[in-house]
Image (cartoon, rainbow, N blue to C red; front, side, top):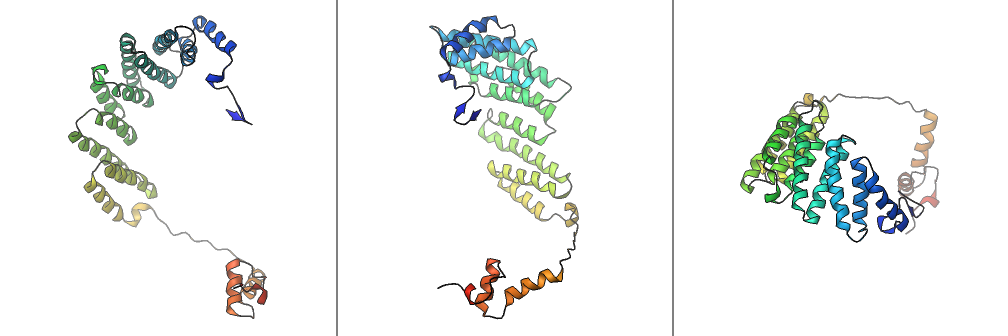
Length: 285
């Protein structure tokens, strides 16, 4: 938060050394893994001590532990695992990377099996796993993507996100077919939507088709939009009547028309000042 030239809390690089010392003493005492991970990551980013990499390792371990501990919001725990993946790669720590990948797979799968739908958690984790180098990706990655499509594929936006992940893992020749599925999903949403609101999914479908080289699909959708009957948009004539007293209208008309020349009248009309009558209102050359 920045206000009046002051930033709170202070940037990490400007944090007082005694405060950083306090973090170092507090980190091992924190009973909640997520709290300990936060302290440890701050200390790693500050490169605190003679062996700062140990703080990064502790942060990874505690982020992984937090994912099974149950303390924290699902999205917060997800962000922790994503950060643990990044830290493990920074450290080039293969064992920690493997344990983090295992935890991410477990959390993603368990979340998709829940009765309540929180697609943001598994999709973010699956996306992070997909960005890993090929030899670091878990063998379950394709199954996770299939599970996400089955669980959330009825929503066009989630379908687009999931297919976007898969598109990075397949050959370029296979990508148009994936994106065509996403385009058609938005088109179906538009067709079953009433009124002017149907334009939004149609427009997104067209933009998606153009972005991924599906020009024929885009043109076909444009024609479909152009041929929509008026009753499909639920358009209705709306009229309104406003009464303005004659005594308010006449002075305005008289001021615009006046009894001088045309240039003066047009000048007053353009300026919106019908009270400025006479030669003084004429524009200077």
